[in-house]
Image (cartoon, rainbow, N blue to C red):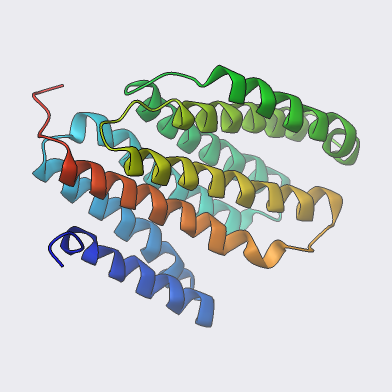
Length: 222
C-alpha cells in the first residue's frame, strides 16, 4: 500500500477524465491536464527535481493552451495552425526534458523519420491545400519523432519510469496521428480513441514523474 500511496493523486485527473468522457464538459477536460500539471509540480518541488520537471510543467501548460485553441477555434485556418504550434512547443518541452537526462535513440529516430516522412509525402502532403499548414504539419511530425526518440534514449535510474515516459509520448504521437487522419484524410475509423490516448499520454508521463521522484534521491541543485 505504501508503494501505491504516491500515485493516489492520480485519482483526481482520472475522475475528471471519466467525467469529461461521460459529459463532454470542456471544464472537466481542462481539469485533467491542469491536475496532472499540479501533481508533477508538487512532486518535483517536494523532491527538489523542479530544475528538470519544469519542462514537463511547461509542456502540460502548452498542451492545455493548444487544446483550448483547437477546441474553440480549431475549425478555422488560424486556429488550427495556432493550436498545432502550441502542441509543437509542448513537444519541445518533452524533448528538452529527455535530452537533459539522456540522448536521442538514433536508430529509432531514423525509423520514425522514414515511416512518418513516407506517410507525409504519400498521404498528407497531397491532402493539404496550403503551404503554411503543410509546413506546420511537417515541423510537428519532425519534433514528434525527435521527442519519442529522446524518450527512448532517457537514462534514468528507474527503468519503469523510463517505460512509462516512452509509453506517454507514444500515446501522444498516436493521438496526433488520429487527428491527421480525420482532418486531412477524412478517415475517422479510430477517431474515438483520440482523446483517450491524448489524456493517457499525460497520465502516463505524470506517473513516470511520480515514480521517478519517489525512487530517485533528491536532486542537488541541478
